[in-house]
Image 1 (tube, rainbow, N blue to C red):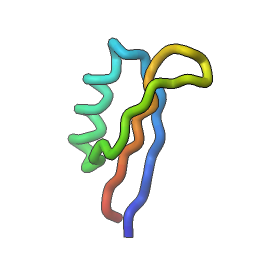
Image 2: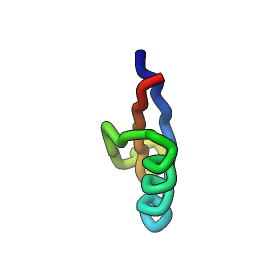
Image 3: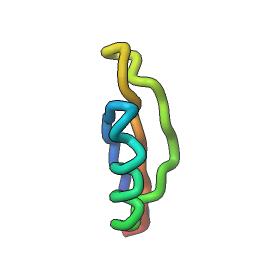
Length: 49
């Protein structure tokens, strides 16, 4: 079974946050521009429970 997490970041903070989540066992499965507010990115993570 998998669990998922959705995070919204500013572009400058994204790399550090993705590396921090990777250390916790999360894997990035999708990245998309945050079109709802016209700036930043939406990152979707997955990890096995």
